[in-house]
Length: 508
Ligand code: FES
Image 1: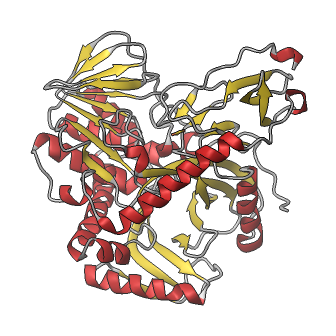
Image 2: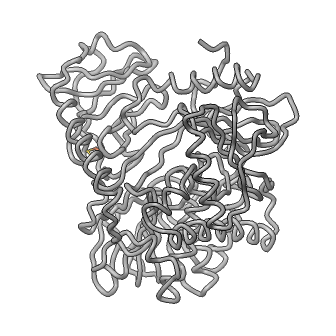
């Protein structure tokens, strides 16, 4: 048990003291050159790059721009994405592993150059990145990764100590990586898009596409945006096009706690190889500690994840004052390489970018660069590596079977699990499954005693949503959709809210 006190409400540090402009929702049918769905780092960077190339863009976001994963990141700008290079060499080959590294290193360089060009003050700092282990059995993996670095000419090596004294026997270092404030970086790009005649609409949810030479994005309120190309960069593609993305991606949640750091920070960005994973970086006088990943909807009591990070901060890093806490959601492809390119081989004018794991700053920027070239030049040297239509038997098939077996099990478990409470047993601030008129529902009692009741069958494919105590939301264990206490969609692939159950909640 930790002695740390933390903020009642999760709130990411990045949105603190920052004026993020508001944009209207779309109320009329419009035409544009490229429609971009999703206002995170990929959508904004793609919009910026396309605008620079004279392309008129329209960006829409279901909520506020920069408020999704981009607003909840740890904002490391690095090509050190865990131990990935040996694995990519094994499964794809040296050439493809080199492309993966180069695309992310190019993204790092692009961010740095853009900061210089636009003279952006966004706390950019260069740091070395480290993955460390304190377990002898994991050393072999570090050694293999070091060999992969050699093959790919990555500047890095094995080291026995790191500037921040963490419990470790060895670490692998990647030199010359960076960190920044992601929203301070992206806001001038937003302004540039507007200055070049681009449009941004918030609270505008894309729900479907009318395909054709000039495809149309259909919004929830029935408006249409006609364009030459569409980019979907809103996590799960809002339009699946028969790509069955929900069968070949899964969602994970992870947690960040920002401590007040009383000691001068010695530099470096850190990630543990051993589980539970820990990620450490600094920001001004804060120490950001991340980790505790789990599949969405599979966390037992999500507050325990914050507590585990707080305990690590207290015991290992000697920090106790927590200023912020927040969590985030990331999507994983089955072979760990993002999907960037046309949504299916038959839809040449609909593009997607997703599946960055936890490395959205560089993968998202690389995706924007690749998509801009695919649209303006008709090709990119790395498109074959990232194409969503790729098929690699190993390891995707095994992971595909595991993932979809798990989804089936979650579906069945949700339907037969009968640990429902009586509505009267749900305490203030608590969420639980209850039975209303013989039907399983989700109920949350707010501080005034009002019970918010929703049908707990996920509107995507019908799995039972689970209560997320830390974020006060209903999360689906199958493909990661999330819903508010009133059933509104927070994260897809579901695009319809949970049905509200109209019981007289004051008497329950
Ligand atoms: Fe697919 Fe809930 S997200 S069933």
